[in-house]
Amino acid sequence: MENKRKAGLLVPVASLPGGHGVGDFGADCFDLIDSLAEGGFTLWQILPLNPLGYGHSPYQPFSSFAMDELYVDLFELSQRGLLKSVPPFEDGIKGKVSYEKSREYKLPLLHKAYEAEMEKDPHCLDKFMKDHPWIKDFAAFMMFKRIDSRSWDHWVPENRDWIKKRTPFRGEKRKAYLFEVWLQMTLYRQWDAVHSYANKKGIKIIGDIPFYVGHDSCDVWANQDTFLLDPETHQPSFIAGVPPDYFSATGQRWGNPIYDWDKLKATKYFFIIDRIAQNAKIYDIIRLDHFRAFDTYWKIPASCPTAIDGQWIEAPGYELFDELLKEYPDIDIIAEDLGDLRPQVLTLRDHYHFPGMIVVEFTFDDDAIAHKPGYDEANAVCYIGTHDNATARGYYLSLTPEKQAEWRKALDEHDCRDNDVVDALISYCLNKPANAAILCAQDLLGLGDEARINVPGIVDDINWTWRMDSLTELKKRIVALKEKIKASNRL
Image 1 (tube, rainbow, N blue to C red):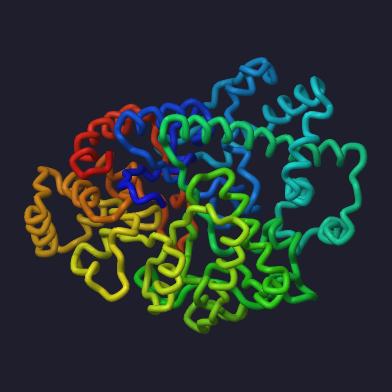
Image 2: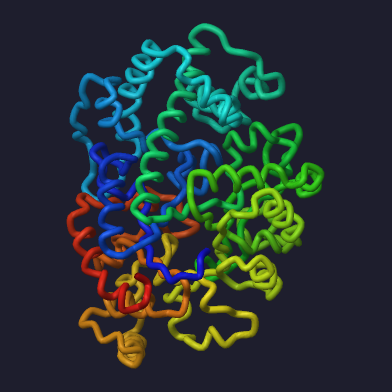
């Protein structure tokens, strides 16, 4: 990232109000960008836009390249004459993303818009297919997925093994296949408009790339020899996760398949490099989630019910990044370097001058962290918390009364004497030496853990569902922070 100090906001697209049960690429994106620019913010961090898989998690997507159809702005399709009208959406839940209801509502309308555009221009998909080679496999994957929602390894052999020969589709199958292509063309076109507008307003977008991919994904289905899979069952032989840590006494058993690093090396790490490079086209800055796995990764036998039994395996991080930066020298990367790390992880990060991350909720009691060997607090991105953490208010309220008193005293000593402890923490974060300070929308709104986005290691109907009903209050808070941002030399 550039050395100029910056302020940013973390808010997922899905958490925007939207008009149909989920935030989308419509007017709220442009409205938020206007407010960020007015308030002196120059960064907008989002979560992965990929098609949501198990548990609605954007970190278990059906593809590393495609986007979720939920983000299509129906009003834009209406303005283009592809829909006669957009009926009201009435099944939403206040303050929550309505994933299933929204998808059920949008899909018939998207089919109508697809048919209208194909009737106007039967060749409208040609250029997109040529410019995005990944779409050919993904369109087939999603077509089969809509027929059978089970994991691809349970599909009927004809569909499961289609990827081996890629036989062309005919008739109704061809029509269903092209619908998936059209969806992605529409999503990319609408996102490009959002991205371009943000850049014109001086806002750079930070996108998140998971280290692993989900087993039930086009990524694995179309690249089976890139992963450690059982050749008979197509199930992972080993799976990813992390050992017992702050979040879980039994570790986190993510279930993602492990890469076959020998295979990757033989291809000069093409699969991973292509994922990063393609995402760098739709974002300005890439945050590499679980960066430590480029140094060492936790390898769990698939037969183990928890993540306790596993072993750390060294990964060829230097070889991979040398190949990446040789081909794409201008990629802007943030390393998510959180957790208990061996020193070699930070050495790898610093070798390429990637900024790391500071999470105030974890480091506030150890403000001397900057004095640790090899730690550059300026070349970093500072957060109060991320999407995986409690909100600032939720975290503070979880502390003992004695610890809360210590925090208030420490904030006073840092000249952060706001009446509200969350406002004081915002000031503290902005004034850290880190070149970038990124705040969460929930903290600007002063919300508690009812607005937490994710609790790692849990699959339920609460994770990933927080959504605003209106942008009005957030926009006020963004603009009101302008003086603080200016005072912290981030404007």
